[in-house]
Length: 64
Image (cartoon, rainbow, N blue to C red):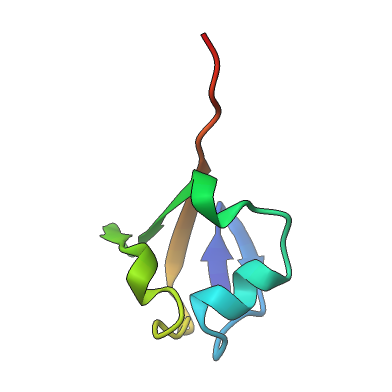
């Protein structure tokens, strides 16, 4: 189980890109932290989610 934004999800074994394909996140407007470290977008397709990973996904919202 992977904790994503505080929720346990059965996503272990998927890459970050594969997981994001199952969501409504706009990849251009998010940042991901994995186990306390920012994950560069270039690594989404090569980073495999592991049991006990802690993922935070933050969406950027424009406005003014």
